[in-house]
Image (tube, rainbow, N blue to C red; front, side, top):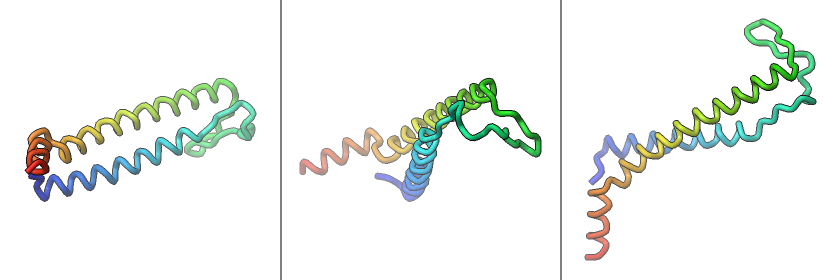
Length: 100
């Protein structure tokens, strides 16, 4: 049987999973091409950085790294969610109750 705390945690995890999936989806849509309109550079903390092939390569790598971090976090949250919702003992109990 799932407790009230586990239910609250599961609902929180489900919400966080949705947000991470949306973020991953948005990041997948980002395209950093050499013809992109960043010829004027990028401003970071008030410092203007030129956008060239070298900078672009770093931004592409950064995007890939961030996506990997989000995907790992997503897997972790999904595993936690599944452990709460489908605990092995609970699943067995549900199967037995359905058969009765």
